[in-house]
Length: 168
Image (cartoon, rainbow, N blue to C red; front, side, top):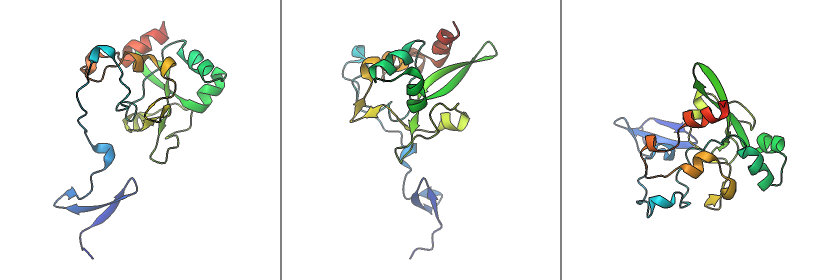
């Protein structure tokens, strides 16, 4: 038995060795994906972004996604979405985003909740990511539709731009 100190991170036992763990937490990995074969086509459904950062819905899109899922908008929100916000001109603007799933495949926070800074910092799989693809792909959130994984962050649709649409 080793005398190295042990501790648990996200249910994984980790052994410290000279300040470095023997096991790397998978949430901290910075995987380098294969180059995008055709960035002009946008999403090619590899799911890299779906497993780490959920896209925000634009105004009117929740109704379309709910109809696509055969649900009423209120039920759709209470089942699949959280309420995020972005400050515009000193005022919070509230938006809908898919809930993140934890490692247990359950919502990281209850659907229809307002998110906090900790939730924003957590990585988690989008509730709609199933069988290596988006289960609501034809009506996916505006941010997901516009996102191109090979773009620089500033070249993709920003949360500020989506919040401005909600404000309008």
